[in-house]
Length: 142
Image 1 (cartoon, rainbow, N blue to C red):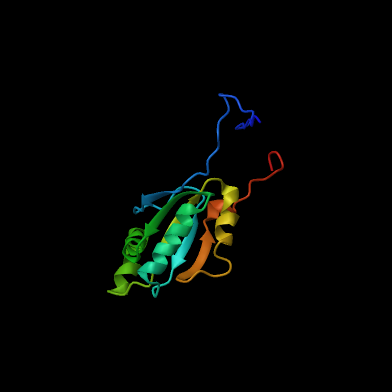
Image 2: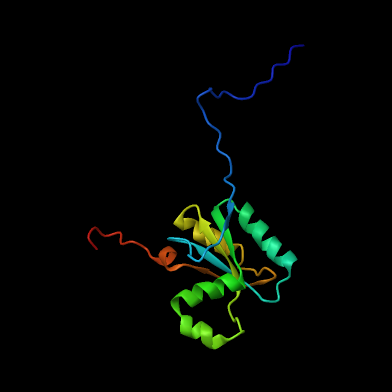
């Protein structure tokens, strides 16, 4: 008996598509450009909860980059545009930590947000940035 097994009829010129992996980036004083999703972290979230959310985001197939913005960095950002307000806060920082998530495509925003619709421990809210919500006109010159 002769058994012949094959691996398919592909040619050497065909490529295999792999699931993209998100990159963890260092958050800076500047928000990401363009469309991104903000995942707000509760002050009560444990480090384990934050790590779980980060893993969820980094393994999501529609995420390009993930940056973590600490409460302190969030306050520093606000101080750049509203210095008097931040000064009036004194030692109180009401801003939550957050993840800034850049999707592969603007249309991927809904897929990313849907991960959090049933609730994830440690997450307060999820919001798309204004450029994600802007829908260009489908009417020429409209």
